[in-house]
Each structure stands twice: as structure tokens, then as C-alpha cells.
Amino acid sequence: MDRSRLQACLEQEQQRFVTRHPRSQQLYQEAQSHWLSGVPMHWMVKWAGAFPLFVDHASGAYFTDVDGLDYLDLCLGDTGAMTGHAPQATVNAIAQQIAHGITYMLPTEDVLWIGRELERRFGLPYWQLALTATDANRFAIRLARQITGRKYILVFNWCYHGTVDETFVTLDNGIATSRRGNIGPAVDPSITTRVIEFNDIPALEAALASGDVACVLAEPVMTNIGIVHPQAGFHDALREITRRTGTLLIIDETHTICTSPGGYTAAFNLEPDILTLGKPIAGGVPAAVYGFSAEVAERIRANLGIDRADTGGIGGTLAGNALSVAAMKATLEHVLTQATYDHTIPLAERWAAGVQSIIDEYHLPWHVTQLGCRAEYWFCEQAPQNGGEAVASMDDELDHYMHLAALNRGILLTPFHNMALIAPQTTSADIDFHTEVFSECVSQLFSESA
Image 1: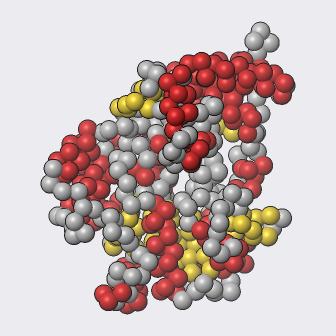
Image 2: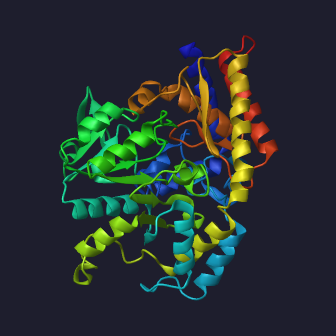
Image 3: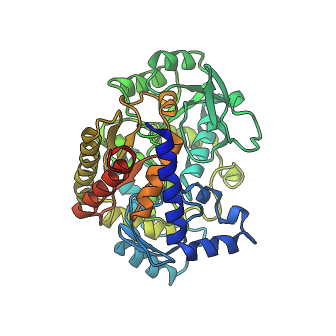
């Protein structure tokens, strides 16, 4: 690639962005007075423009910014809005519940339906509610340590399970070390956590052999470093080794719920001891769940008396609030249904095929991968097999250009990688629009006439 041409294209797109968004720029500048880095949550500085867009309203697969510009949203709140923005069934349930109270620290009848539905989808009989997937993972880890009496956990290199302290660990020349950007950890995660590469069965065997690891926390397919699929036999080995060594297996479905209504777990018959899920489960209202096998639930009950129920570091005052519960029931019953996946997964296939056609046209050493209604393109010829390979394939400058050029043409991609998520309201025309935009962006870089 001609890097000078890339830089020139990027500068052109940056100027175009600033010119098109005067109101967002003004609001961003004013926000500097009271918000750290001008945003209410610091991830919002990660977008490709010189400042984040300020949103005016959103519906379905689209949103409009404060400058009146419309966008096809293929980020969808980094999965939090996988249901599409403001799904009607969820909106109706929220409106009805708000009029009757938001939180009581007491259950509502809706939790009975939700518990049955979660068991039907994921195969685990017992559940608890949280507000975020981060909390669900944190609570699951604490419970795993409690009932096993073991101190370590195991994660995969370049995983992401929310802002859980123990998981911000990576491999540096084969040595576990605190991950870059891990801010103020109370304890160096290399002391609490073992880390190996995804798909490395011998390393997994060796890491669990000593019998001192409480749990393996894993996405069934890595997604936060890009989509990294398990190799054939990996999940069978993961389950067999964890069972043999007395290690609990926690499957984090927060992103892989894009696979099916029961996530990757149901689609591929996984058998986790604990399962965690957040983000889209209540249509964007903060909510998460973590579920247990009958055996794990009994061990938890035996180790957590009622006298310690409110001081065990598990749960939270607003967890299981009536509003989140009502939104979750409506979303599971009417939005995250099989019919939704029957619509969105073929569109993700269409998205991937459109991108691949442009890659083939320009003979680029890139490739496309897909997981359910989620798909992405990589700037490498071969699909990475683990987090280390995925990081090595990254090109931040090229990422920045592709994201910004798409945004300037009315498409929002997930800011952390080149990933698209398909909402229930997305259409074939939307997908073809992305293919056109992708073609134009690539043409600027590689076409002789550009």
C-alpha cells in the first residue's frame, strides 16, 4: 500500500468530517468544561472523527445526529442496541413499567417467565440478574473462587470481558503481564490470572494441570479483538479438560449472542457451568444475567448463607430492578427471537459477500469473516487463530481511514475494529449501500484513476 496516499486520503476525510458536523463540534467543545475529555464515558473518544457525533434521535437501524445527518448504524452501541434502536415491544414495556415504579429491591412476576425462558435458551436452570456483563463476569468469578477454594482464573490472550480487573492481562513473549492501558489495577493481574492463546489445547492442558485454577472465562468465539473462531475440536477439549481438572467453565455470550437466540452455546451444544450475558438482552436498558448448572447452584447455596447475602460482593442495589426486568421480558419474547435471526443472519452473509467482492476486484490481501449476524473484514490474508495473531494483523491508520470514510458517507461501524452488526430493521438495500460505500473507500486508496 502507498502509505503517503493513505495519509492524504485520511487528511481529506478528516477535513470533510469537520466541515459536515459544526453542531457536534460546538457541543463537544462546550462539553470540555464539565466532562473529562468532553464525553460522559471515555470510550466515546475512540470514534474516527476529530470529535464524537452527538446523536439527536434513533430508530431501528438508523440514527440522526444534531447536524441533521442520517446514518445506517452497523455498530448498534457495540451490541447494546443489537435489537435495533427503540424496538417497539421493549419501548411499550418500558413505558408501562415506568408508570408503576422503576426499582423496589423486590422481585416482580416477570422474573418467573424470564427464568424459564433463559433455561429454555441456554440449558442452565438457575439465574441471577446484574446491570452489566462486566458485573455478571465479576460476580461469576468471585463465586467460582468461593466454591472451588482456588485462587487463579484463566483467560485467553487479548480477550475482553468488560472492565474486570483480573482479565486485563496479556502475553509478552509468553509471559503474563498487565495489559497496556490497564489503569490503576489493585493487583497486578499476572498474580491472579493465567493467560494462554485461544485454540491452544496443549497450553490449556498445562495451565490447568496443577489444579489451582477456579475457572476458565471464555467467549466461545473471540470477538473483542476481531472475530476469531474456535478450531475444530477446541470446545470439546476445553470442556473435557476443565471437567477433568475440576475447573469451572464460564462462557461469556455477551457478543456471541449474535449467533442464535441461545447464543453460540445453543447453536453448538456447549455445556458451560456458568453463562454470562449482557448488553442487548433488555433492548439497551442496562441489564445482564448469569446462570448456573444445578450442581454449581447447589455449591453456591452451600457456601453463601442468608446472613451474608448482602455483603458477599455479589449483586447490587439496582440489579434486578423492575424496569430492567420488564424490558428484558419484552425483548426476549418479542425481539431477540428466531424470526429476527432468520432475517439478520442472511443479511450478514450478504454484507460479507459484498465486501469480499470488492476485495477480489482489487486483489487485496484482506479477508472477511462472519459470526451469525455479525461480520467484519481483516487486513490480512489468513484468518487469525488467536488473539496474538489478531493484534499482529492490525493496521490502525488504515482502520481509521476506513471508519472515517464510511462515516462521512453515512455508515457507522464499530469503532474498535472493522465490524458490522445487523439489526432486525436492516434491509437488503442497506447492505448494498454499505457495499457501494466500501467500494468507494477502497477505490480512493487503490484505483489508478483516484
